[in-house]
Image (cartoon, rainbow, N blue to C red):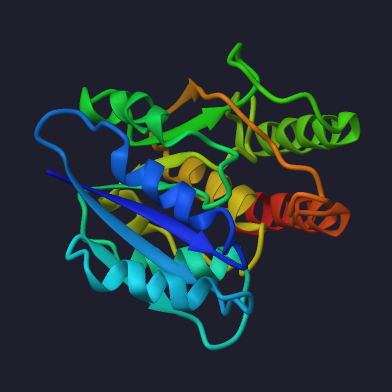
Length: 232
């Protein structure tokens, strides 16, 4: 069995080498092969050239390039289309999430309990203390998403999401930016997928350190929650 680790990348020249080294070194369950699917979303800081050099010497790495910046959601659409693994997991390139926890996130898929697994930053693992209002916004968005999709997630916005490949093949994803999170949540819930949550640690960044999501993305997430739960 093969795991496709999909990594959207945009202007992460300083952190991408560390992140990808950790992803490559992360232990996987026995019998699970590793494929890295990287999508450079038109980086302008030297990330693209470094990724091309990185991928050139590694047959297990697939690199896709966007010629214009389209957003994280669009990068994930490209990555999902290129992935060949029976299992697919999303991993950011900014070191906020620890690749050593990938194996833990995969457990409910590998033992046959789940079709989709969400990570959660709010069930007891170590996390960096940062923005209070971000946590309030995340809680409100997750609560509204749960009310409309009738699931009981604690962290709809968590990066770590793992899927059986056949689940991704059944959903048509549209959102180009951070709306991917509420959109995919609504669509897997509507499919009746068996969804599990797994606690993960979190080392969030400040805006000075390169964090990209902002308050406008919160309003976009609200729009997506309403759109994909009420209108399909």
